[in-house]
Length: 190
Image (cartoon, rainbow, N blue to C red; front, side, top):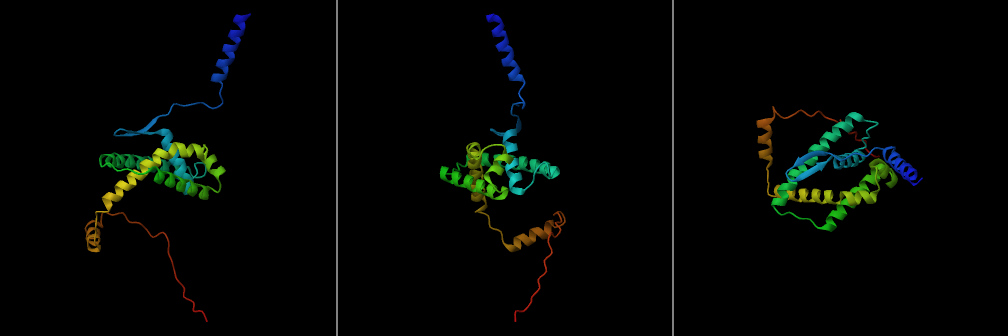
């Protein structure tokens, strides 16, 4: 009798283990930059956050969402390259700066989505979990930004240099059509 109970318990255990409604996947690698790895789950999280900020939802605009995924991946790769360079130059940021930047980002997402609940629904996790999971990413973004600022701060370009560059390369620069036409009517107030 004891053998049958053990067999029944083992059978029920394995049935529950394999009969889960949602399958669990092992995370994959989206890209490797130096010693830094970009996980597919991290890519998905940033894509979801960016989609919320830009009001691009996969069910409504699938083509734009796919382009957004590619753009975000390229941006994450670029960020990791810059992060590698910043680490070589010993650039650092304070924890309070990271906390403030993360809170500002969350407030922006809430204002765009309409509510905390909507943000949590779209991201598939609570804001508390998002804060915890995104803290190091926010720190890395601030370090990269600070490094870029140190590089750009030493660059000075005059108007003449910009015009000379444009005249030299205007044939190879892409044409960007006007997106908005504005007209102005002046009506005197009597």
